[in-house]
Length: 67
Image (cartoon, rainbow, N blue to C red; front, side, top):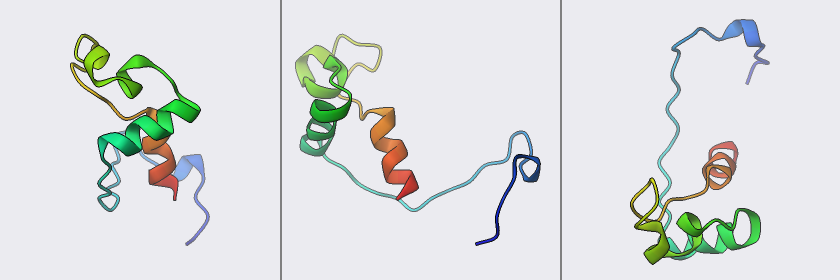
């Protein structure tokens, strides 16, 4: 893959990566170690959050995307 620099990207440009399915146990395990917030670790507490349910950590999704 060729090296890319900031000026190689355009505002609004989008990239699509391969799909990757994760389940609640994986979400909770990652969050317990790296981002222990209730909406990542506790399905009941997550229902009253902004997400209205369990949500994967942004760090988790970034790690998947970069792998």
